[in-house]
Image (cartoon, rainbow, N blue to C red; front, side):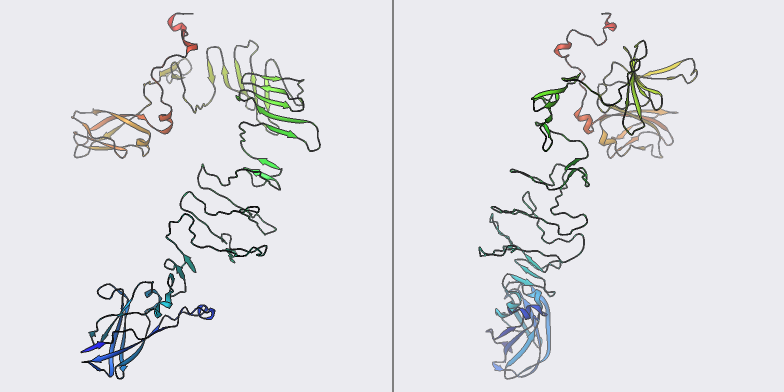
Length: 523
């Protein structure tokens, strides 16, 4: 019987010798194995068929990589030498054991692989066949070097660069990233963080914590670019000290033409806007009183308001001079924007019986306000709650349009109720599925049902209530028509936030008064 010489003999590797020429060239993951083969206690000789397999345990375990077959290997006086190559992926910093089979007989025990082959994978550094390296992790195809740590230390660094001298050059860098790609989306240094920390963090006691410069002299480029995907996030956030901008600043525009160019609404809370000409002596400000109830233009030299605007009036505290047209013809005010063709007017007739807003471009009245009636000519839109004493539609009578009107009252409810109805024909099983719009359950809740047979009678009923925007009617006969009605109460976001109270107490200043005293026969 053949037995393998148990002690490790020799293992030589030609990979990861720490010299630049070897690192720059192709990797060689092969190593030489020398062993002694005995047969019945005596050294074996001659040609034998060998099989070599790599395992992760001395007994049992799992095979690593493929089996290497070496037929006709020459054994001289018990000694044999063979070159084995299991590839770089076989060495991952875990123990490896070599199992040898000779002429179909597996020799025992498996031989532990001595440290020399692990030079292919220096402890903590893994290299794949394409020369991608990983430190603390397996290599990945998209990175030449990937470094990973599982430390939970609060100040742990996956990579740390240190310049250990106080006399380093002015543009020295402990860590430098350089992307020589010319594409528009390349990145020199990339930082990311999965929590609420910082993707990129810089600090300096007296210099620049973070410095960005776009070196191109033409085109639209960015020294520093910030962006957030959150509607409530900040693309840029500055705290403390002062902020300096050299050049025009645009808010809402990428082509500012002034020192500060704002497109859109600007809101100022708690502060005035001050105007001062360089070299001038006069100073002005725009602002509000602390309660926000009064808007003022203030002469800061005199610390006095020159104009005050309140909800119901505007007061000029100095002489009023209007360097533009102001036309009042028989109680009419005309409005026209410079360079615009649209014109409007607020007017009253000679009797002052009502007030009108007029589209002068079309010569049509849009709104008429009378003591007991407000009339809107055209479509109207109310984005909030419309509160009324009653409601109806009023149209020219369909049968006698020139002599009569036709009116119907609105259907009222203490709930924000929607009504849906229709007719459906029952199938051979006496059933029908009524499919509602896909937004139905998103808009409505608390459904109520009514069913009426048309042209016959059957004990129809709602077999299954609304689920997935549909419900089922059953209990009828084939071909029977059923008229159905479903009501639902709105539960969309606006309705949930603006429920109408069915009953409420009058405010203190309205107690004792009536909205419609004539209905109660009171003055």
